[in-house]
Length: 492
Image (tube, rainbow, N blue to C red):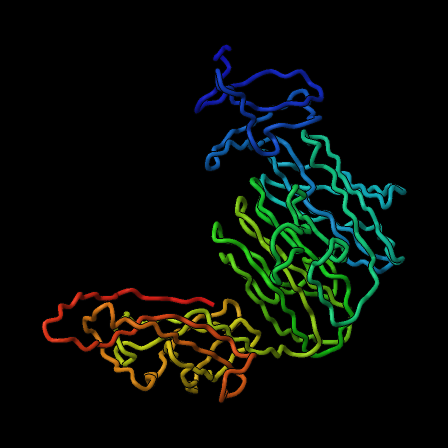
């Protein structure tokens, strides 16, 4: 293998005869393999090289991965097509385009579109864009989308200096859907349920919202809406509800979400009277989200007047992140009103061999996994020895546990437990093995009513701890001392 054409930290030119080619950019490793670079331009089918133009391909290291970026001199790209609505006979088709080349582009551009492979509409417009600039063109010829059904709209451009053609055309399907009424719920239990949504892949890459039935959902089953990252492009993807008829007043929108702890993700909840997301209002943004457990989102929205509304989830994470998962999307009439749901996650015991005193209390951790806060906590606890069930002791405490965004965990000290008759409590003493005794501490919590006994609705956890008390010694008896210092944590 010759190394004369191998590049390292520099650039090299090669002449290519004009024509259409399939190509790939490789990294040959003698005696091992030939690696092909990643990215859209690591390999490409049916790429047209035009006479008189320079085409620059740059290989960059992205972590441990080689990614190819393309820098053409003249390139006008279609980024997005959209319609002003999905129900009228006079809807406006818009096309967003940008100068992705290295030179200014100031010339006449021809704009085209067709609906369901029908008649082609042609219009011209002069542009003047510097590298990196974008603009939007609105066709003056309107679209008739008044009938229910799916409309396949194809739009494209042509101009004299454009030397890259793979990004000159976009085709999208827009569906005129029947208007539905509240409540709207979707647990994404099937692909047909997910297909009710309109998916908008703004940057037209190969990554957008999709249905996934392999990852666990928020209910312990499968079926979620999923956005997976792109190596090359930041996320710019929408999933939009069908049109929903809503009366003036308050509604509540809720959903479950999860990302990962690998990288931070960004997404937002939006709504508007059109399916065009550029006209929508942001309800709530969720930025720098790094959570690997399901979280609840709750939003109350004021609807200004009766009408048809659309809601959207917009993913806008940076490129090369990881994933966003959505489940249990719901829109209901009225302001949000939820219920607390307290879970006892663990009991933390004092050092073995100590009594339950102010210096060595039993603690428990409680988490609100519900949909509203609680302002009072009721709890019961019981100390049970080997020879008896013990007695439940009931207490209460004022505490605010707010479940919104990320449910919080709190630790609380139980009052000193009254020991069972016949047991002497000591703290911090040395004990013989014979004096070790296992006792179970049980705890139950509730936010509903003060319990007088253990009801089945209460969340309960139990922990085993070693309680020591001194045994009588005969005169002259030797003592084998043992000190137990372990902390025991029991989880539900």
